[in-house]
Image 1 (cartoon, one colour):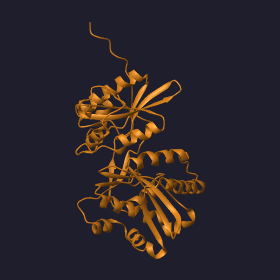
Image 2 (cartoon, rainbow, N blue to C red):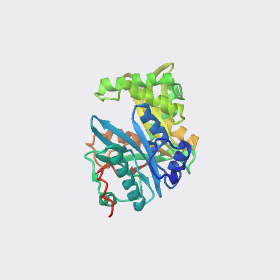
Image 3 (cartoon, rainbow, N blue to C red):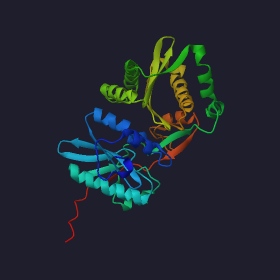
Image 4 (cartoon, rainbow, N blue to C red):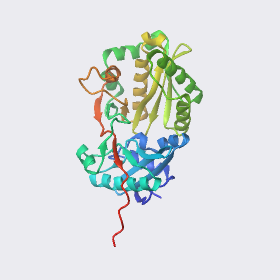
Length: 323
């Protein structure tokens, strides 16, 4: 059944058609609403539903904890306008009642205002599940040289001169390289106190997404020694900077700079339109916990993208039938 004619929620859809509609302009939906992210959720043992209707589509994850249940739509529903978002909300609440969910958690991807979401009965969540603000670099309509010129001078110099320190960055689809990424993440965790996901989270993610052609690993080496690694998500339009790590002992080599520059330039060469650095601190908030990392991301050029944030709404009881 085509995503545009779905009248009920389904666990299986034509994935090619679903993603084609999701990523097509002007809808230009987020990777976390794709069939690829749904497959990763299923691989982690979660139920997912696909639904769509006039002007909207949404992948919803059923999250259960004991007797409690909610529906979560990361960067969804995707809707063309306020009216379509209204229809999507009604459909989500109906699915929630079907699954015994107490509430729905959404992050609308639509050309609407926050007041429009509030009028639908949603309340802002206490915290955003996915970043409400991110930093993106537009890759199309400019040459490779022009893109490099948007990098800060120190970024250009470190990327261009990496070979002098015998540093190389290579993309990989070899699942064995996930273990290198884990080594780097463990080193970051040990030295910073950052609490990562469990190892199997990264292993399952890499296996699921790489086998579907929806993710790429990157490994940075000095000579033959791995010193940094990352995984990016890939849609036809956008590359997303997902997880990365590097050895503390290699920090003076600026491995993150060289690796990120390579990933951005590779995305342009692949024909992707946007590089999403995934998460940014607001402007002029130097005490924000993401401020330092945001400054690093901004050294590659780009602009802010404001999202609508995370919202919650109760799954209203089914209204009584009219007599």
